[in-house]
Amino acid sequence: MRADRLVAALLLMQQRGRVTAAELAAELEVSVATARRDLEALSAAGIPVYPQPGRHGGWQLVGGARTDLSGLTASEARALFLLAGPAASTSDEVKAALRKLLRALPETYRTEAQAAAGATLIDPSRWGENTRDRPEAVRRVQEAVVRRHRIRFRYKDVRREADPWGLIDKDGVWYLIAGTERGQRTFRLDRIGDLETTGATFDRPGDFTLDAAWDQVVGTIEERRSRTWATVLIPERFVWVLRDHFGRHCHPGDPLGDGRVRVRVGAPTPRDIARTLSGWGSAVEVVEPPAVRSELARIGSELTSRYGS
Image (cartoon, rainbow, N blue to C red):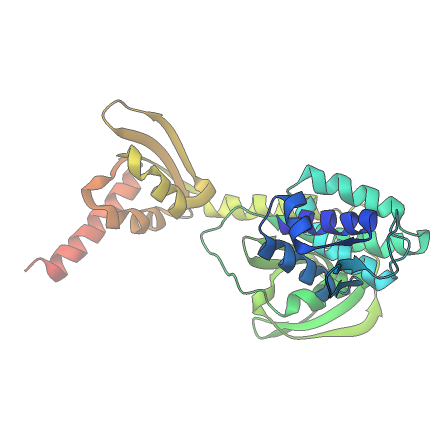
């Protein structure tokens, strides 16, 4: 993940004072182009990293080599932790790096840096969709999370006001967990409009952690998305396709010996499962439940009625 490389690049520049993209690429075992993009990302995020042209040039942290991060400003430290924080949810190494970086910061910066590191969570598991465009609202909401600024926005044509507690990137789809007058709520950022801060501040609940809150949200949604389970038989070579269709609601078993595999798949209703499987024709056999078999028969009858002639 890129965030851990960004942290490593910064620490390397602090140790050496100046590095070239080629040297960084060799250290991180990536291409020179990737190393250059990482350096540019640090600079674009507000970290004081600049290229020095010339024969003995390279990239360096303004102010020269340092053994700690005390030379960073509050906004620069916040920017760094916003970059690295999401990676910590999926990498123990980044968690350890963030803890060390946090200890190296001046006391006055630690609160905001820690808030920035916990402002965003990455959940790589899919829910059957993938939105790669990062909403513009992400940056603004991240800032509100870190600074504890209440926000006002339009959601499903209703004006809402909320305390932003944290952001989640779930395979490119961004969600906001926030406190409202009705308690904790979850919002999709690509459905938020007319976003603004109110000028009011808030305190996040003392027992709130973003990963625990997201686990609760995922548990509720997964329960809704898997109310119906079906057992199907499918050629082993196609199991990966079925897994792509159903995501975490696809549980393959052991091969049966005839080239097929018994697989359990889940969806909200029998009709949802039947609609997904109907395009497979006879390549997939539904063992149970009868409700899914009935839905497949109904779909087959409708297709025969319309196209059979």
